[in-house]
Length: 324
Image 1 (tube, one colour):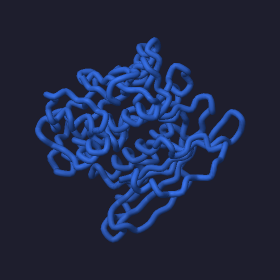
Image 2: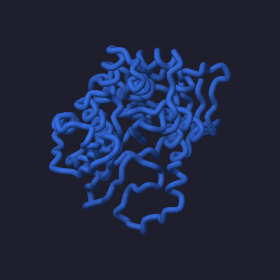
Image 3: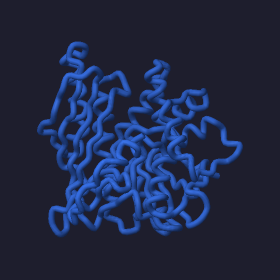
Image 4: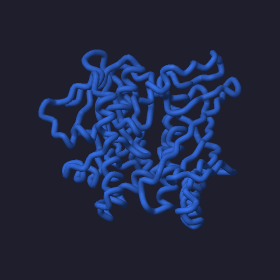
């Protein structure tokens, strides 16, 4: 649907300083400001995925800042985007949402000097984030090379957790797992941007693992071999998927990205769904030189991403993605 909506829009006029636009569905726009530096600009917002207003603000802010880290940048400024039904949501609740977002930004030294608010039918919160990146350190969702190792930085499964949350069936343990994952910033992306052996990078969000990996492969003119057993999955998310919990977005992702994806004939439905599960504040996906994969994985682990794992590699032939 997004591709259809954008298909007939006029393309931006050629601009040598616009280093990254919307040609490949990258994580952020990047604009040159001098010979060595560029500005990163992105925005992200959504309706509540949890009931607690402070946690909602934290998750939304983490999700928005992730796009800056995914291109190898560092966020330096954010503006709040707030839509609230002020006749239904109290001032105290709105303040808690804002405080949650501010807490995440404060932890990484990002000020929120303002923003914009409107009266809406449903609560909405997010950020417009501005970052900086050295031009030589820009990472995109294209650039992966044959032989590259694929590293996933966090476990997947938050879509199932969010679905259970909305249904009122999420356990306290599942809630803690969801909050721990969705408020864990992908700030390692700035360090990965400094490495020449990292060839491509993106964050796994609404299109799910197979959707975003498909974009990497197609934009890089490579294919991928994915080791299903190596993909880290959040334990509570796994249990919910196995119990039959699902989301509408999972099906839409499957329709949008199933072409060129080869799955095992006996793949259980829950694993099929997991691969297309839309993530909130999801993990970084990194394509790197295979000789550096162990070192980069160790860096993830040292920075507290305990679930990070090498999940496959890029190759030159076969379907866009082969899952084995």
